[in-house]
Length: 285
Image (cartoon, rainbow, N blue to C red; front, side, top):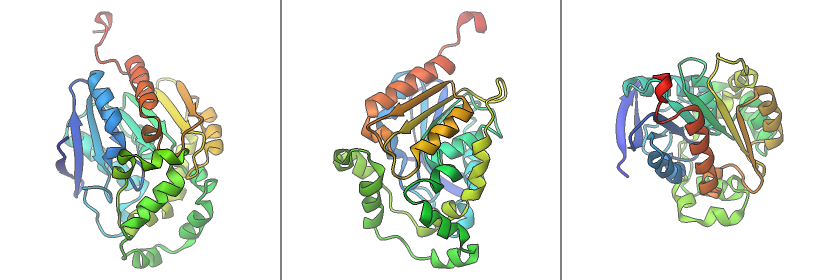
């Protein structure tokens, strides 16, 4: 699958495009690339959608600007919004995992979106109550100028793979598949520290109101064995959000699209066909 590039919001974004039909945009988690979605790209394209899968800034083949200020929820939201406008993607469906889910939810507050699928959404609370909560608190309490200086070193290539193997997967056998290995990205330290330092601003997502007509249809998916974010806390947030569809995958961790690709693909296709059909019924034209 060819990797394309667009310059938007002052940063170069790498992405793939496949299929024809209504647009669906896929947004990965921190530490990954668009390749976590390979199975879902194929399934959604076959189901009649045009699928865009992005490498978010800091990851994969996208640009990695220096400075933690480039890796906040507001900046990611602004950049992806600029990508949508650049490609004239009017009212797309958004599917995201972790950081990508947070960006999708944030975008739905500022632009018209047809539907959102939030997989293991990153918020202040889900991060605080997860495995890395204590580290997140330390980073959050560190002055930005100190973090910016300390983050000038690059993470060694082996570190992202070690984190993925130890924390991403509910079942360790899933971590050894070639697709899982290929989906992990080396990244500059400032990409991760910037995101974690900005976690207080992710709290706004926790009050996402379920007001009919004022938000797009929402599907949430949680891996019950998630060790990065708290699935228990995520369940409480989901109850408050009142999504149109809620899924909990008991054998999955942080990357269910890699752990159970067929099941996740089926959920996406079913939900989008219900709320974002590829063909508008004749009576609604």
